[in-house]
Image 1 (cartoon, rainbow, N blue to C red):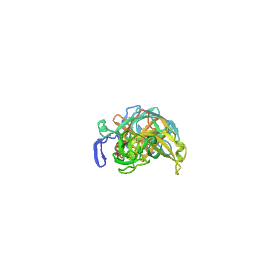
Image 2 (cartoon, helix red, strand yellow):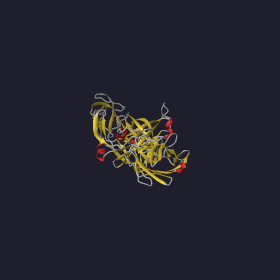
Image 3 (cartoon, rainbow, N blue to C red):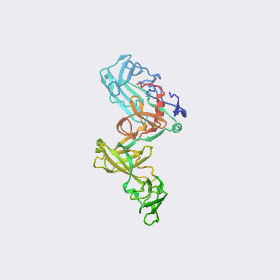
Image 4 (cartoon, rainbow, N blue to C red):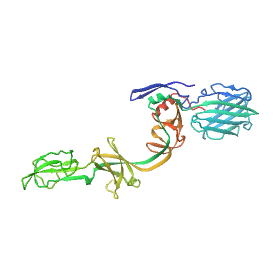
Length: 425
């Protein structure tokens, strides 16, 4: 039976969207009424009640003409496996007297077949019942020359959302496949001017400053007049000009002052700058020239570069060395003295299957993603390998090529959780 729920999405106190969603007995519950319930022996089939009764071992009880099978999913101290108990007219049957198979058909078309072997007083399924425990079940039994068959639906972690509503809710999906998982090292540092791009401007001849036209922080071009100075010898006034394009970083000149050999202006070409990162002793073995670096300023601007040079000597009392990154800076967003963070890629690991970290949600005791099959979404319990801030390698629980939710996956989880059903077998 499909039940309707009302999902209200609130972000920062603003109502974004409200619609009825339809979980198919999700959140760990098993929809015994969602499938066909019938048994048939050598004669006409008998439809069993929609609510499958429980047996003495806590499993689901199926009966026909005095013969009964109790099918339980046992997972105490072992990976999940089927245990089955057979009776005739309420009396236990020797497990050797019954032939039993169970077939599980999953939403993606995968079919799991289980045969059973006698063990003590029950039949033990051969194989692990993998998560999620969400499937259509077919039971076939044979005893005393008669055959019996029961089918039912057992769903968990599943919900249905119409495509139009999923789009309105901003639910985004992509296909699970290969990725490159990087290992990174976080460093801090500062922006520096390139010494080869700095000009110190001095008076050509000693004299007295007549006027100053350039201001601190101003951008100037090569040949721009910075000030005018009257020569002490010739009493002629000459122009002091900028030798390069750049920004005035220092101005030590005022009208009326006498000039000497000291620099009057310092101009830096900041179209390209250095970022010097501090690498501490425990990190030195991981850092190499040529490694990719992501530079982020404290106000959130991001730049990409590579380590161009690594100091061979310890230069600071902190026992750190310098790693230099050269960055183009055409818009002047990086300024000398500015503090930055650097994320150095120290290793790259290509993996065959990965999912985005943004897709992962908690479900029962598992970390999961939600696979999409047309308008149906179903949980996938994952085993992880390598991870970083963006990707998680999947080593179990998901097939390559599966479409899964990467954006607003919490909406799927919230809708499944609304059913309040238990993980019942």
